[in-house]
Length: 285
Ligand code: NAP
Image (cartoon, rainbow, N blue to C red; front, side, top):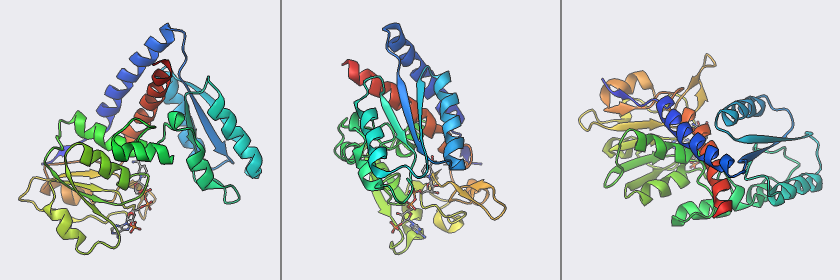
């Protein structure tokens, strides 16, 4: 039976550390603050925002909600973003994406000041991940995978990692983070020939392609004692949240596996909170 790599204890440990760091900032009279920038009334954004507000309050982080109407004009939107970039009382900015199509989403992504880019979407943040420098922050989900591996003492050094998915949010930055930890990364995507072969040869298989139930028994080698980290967040035919991997099929064949829900996704917001405190601490150095 495989070890179930749950996200809850990882998030709990991260939250404990974040709260301690926020408390010591508070003792110096500094209030770590996250600005949440939302355009429109998308249900998924609102639900994530509520979750963030709850989590932030437990971690000693203040949230400044900035809600703009769906039809906000481009210039007005960028005035708000610029003012958040310049506001010394705001340490981190989380902007819900994608923005409505009439707004310049690419300018917005690259327009968040790197030192406040706690969600890791700007070019400088991504460059920092690539070169291993603190220019901004790693994307939270990519960093959440590293936190989960660390928590369960899974050392990446010398390991063969098959990473399926090459987006800027997950796959590419995570590939750099794993390489920085001395793993050998096989970065796969939709044009990869023989993905099952790449996956079977790996020590650690990370799935981030956004396809419900894609990774079946064909993608693992029961002789290897592999670890499967499922980043996918999809809905199945019954509308239930599920990963890219078929958990019940892989679980008897591998050494350890993350569930969905309850795996990487539960760690992501905890990473976001830690990034806010870190951004705040950096202003005091
Ligand atoms: P994305 O931007 O759509 O990228 C998907 C990647 O998967 C692309 O690189 C694509 O290849 C590759 N791909 C798609 N179909 C494939 C196939 N049949 N075989 C091999 N590769 C394939 O998605 P994303 O934003 O990275 O998200 C990936 C998954 O992670 C989604 O399920 C998303 O919901 C989830 N996610 C979870 C969290 C969390 O907190 N746990 C956060 C963010 C995302 P090409 O580049 O060749 O098109």
